[in-house]
Image (cartoon, rainbow, N blue to C red; front, side, top):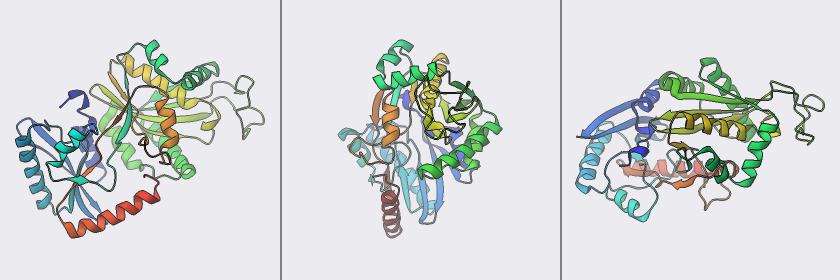
Amino acid sequence: MNNEEGNFLQSPEWGKTAEKVGHRVILKEIVSGVTVLMIIKDAKRGRYLEIPGGPLLDWKNRALVESVFAEIKQIAKAEHCVFIRFRPQLQNTPENLQLVAQTGAKPAPFHLHAQNTVILDLRKPESELLSDMRRQTRYEVRRAEKLKLGVKSGNSKALFEEFHKVQLETAKRQNFIPPNLDELKAYHDIFKEHATIYYVETTTNLTADGKKILEGKPEGDYLPASTKLNYGLFLDYGGEVEYFEAASTKYGHLAPGAYAMLWQAIKDYQSKKLSRFNLWGIAPPSQPNHRYAKVTTFKTGFGGEQVEYIPAQDIVIDPLKYRITKIIEELRKKIRHLS
């Protein structure tokens, strides 16, 4: 297992976050050196055992894999779970799919966390990170500087609550389900200084250097100073930071605030000596109509390596009840434009 990919989804902090929002968590050393974070989730379609971002083990060691999963299956049965769902940090290659198949798993009908992402190497100098960007992205970063957009960050409870309100507004405009306030409070309480909200606001009465960006003209012909535009939640764990959640006000599209925010966050986490910046979630290359298509254009513009992990996998415990789950999840996937 590559330690750089020993991600926060298998961390004790993620387990405590899950507990805080009402799930039961099992953190157990299955065999020497292999500790697995398991989350018991109760859904209308049945109870299941989730292993986010794991298990973290040597997948080429067949005896080890068999031993670990034999124990996990026993736990799932004891907990009356319909199935086990896991998505390890393995890139989507034929070899890795074959390694996972030895568990008896099959592809899940629904994803489990970000399967496709973009990862920036923060060990590169700032000049190289800039040159790796798409030309349009560099232009927007520079334009944000000319417009003197202000980027601030913090992790107060009040700021998390403010972020949640903006997320609700964003979800209404863009038709998605946002995390609830309890989840955001859990990130704040458990990850502490490793959970940071960034936000962007205007510092002057903005007229966008002579160009009309103000389609709605909120204040006649300018956007007033101190108008909030974009927000982002960043979680860092070990040597990696995740651009975990985002939101924008109704004015967010009027200026390149998201570019300013992300570029500032990249520079800040680089100065903290983190090595990887995970942009957390893009559309699969084969799905141009995916609901993440627009945000994918934005994220991939920053350069970096596009990574595709293997799809979420299910091990069926109760075949009859699982059949119902599969039908429901495939329907949800179509409704939410995730395929």
